[in-house]
Image 1 (cartoon, rainbow, N blue to C red):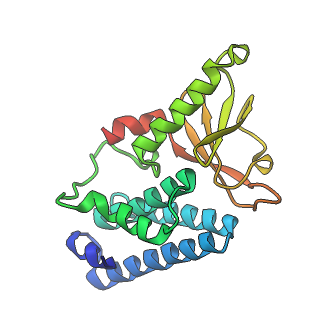
Image 2 (image 1 turned 120 degrees about the vertical axis):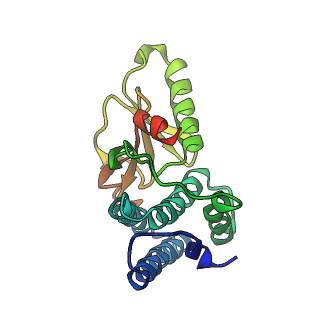
Length: 209
């Protein structure tokens, strides 16, 4: 398996510049892998955030670059929450390229704006929402209110509203009562995260359908 699968994606950017952008994506992903392996969680999350920014820049301009970047974000995000694979690099490569096996990438619908594009895999978003709903259902005193915080695929806690990222580990996911989801980014394991970054809204389901 190689990085060269991107050559199958047609784009609107000049070939030499496009190749440069693919190389930049590779550098960020490789850096994220190194940060993960060395336990530098804040830099790992920053790498994911950087990939999200790159994907936003490619959206509507080059579908190949956009899809390639977002599949890496999906792979990194899924592993962060599941945390079940020892050989992360091999797993991430397999997950990133799996959607392209025998498939043709289609342009995003014209009505799909950047706000409806999601870096979280729909199946993972549904799993997060199911965990949060179960937590609230088992605690009627909460009356279905507030935000449930998940870490590594398990419920870590609850807040009455989305706030205080410094109280949570980077890469935690917060799920509100509507199913919207936010990723804790920046900071470190000792000081906590520095911000909540949107990664999924209920509108994303319509865009993904």
